Length: 349
Image 1 (cartoon, rainbow, N blue to C red):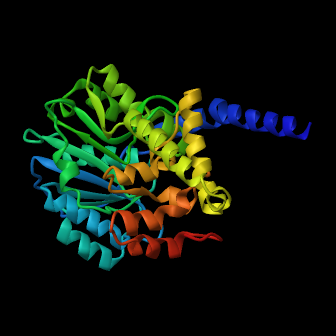
Image 2 (cartoon, one colour; image 1 turned 45 degrees about the horizontal axis):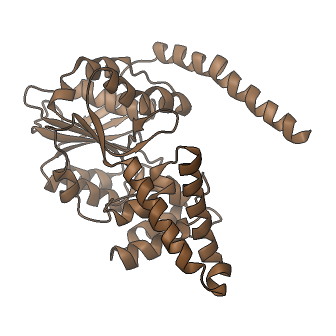
């Protein structure tokens, strides 16, 4: 009875959010100023090359994680002008000085509208796309990494075959390219669907609305506009590899009593079964969470911060991440561990 009551309460709260709170938040967003920019460096006209990255950031203390500078440097060294857009309202002096050596511009704004509000402000302020713009990458700080150089990944962005590239794709809620990295080529940037979508973005202060309307909505809007969307690490290929490889590894480990009873093996087994259950029941998994291991082994350069910090969907085998990064990728996990030391509450890495 208690379980049924709790379920009913959760359902009522969910309905109230979508029937009352979110409509009010949308209404309030129309009363706000559309632009939430506080300051821009440099002042005046900002010179931008044909390829650029709009990099969205947030930190409540105005800091920039050391690993982000490596990410920005990788983008810069691979021919992208970086525009750093922060919702932090302010940046400390040391961070600002380092950003000025890596970025074409730094835009500081209020923390309203999440990533899409920040990107929309940057597009409007910079007048994008400009006549010579060939590519705009939308990226954010929701990942740890890069764990490997980005050159090979960026060279795979072929706009002759696809108009919009993501790194990963998801079928949760509805099909979409995951928004921590989206790359738009020249056809997409000049499409009516691109212009109309960004004109529709409002500074709504409810994350679940942002996810539905913008994170999922941008791919859906581009597809309806006739644009080609594709992921560099496709969902189907990852699921097929994870399903097959996981089953083989599981069979070997189950051959000994120690393997069958080892707690680490058990967590790996549970994750394999979770993936296979998703295949069998056609349940959409989150590739950057459930398939984190297979992504890294396939050359994916990032790990989601939320996965290591909160693990909200209780991925079973994530405790292996240090071993995979250090021993398999031969990469240094220390920069991630340094961040986790300030982020984790009551857990171990």
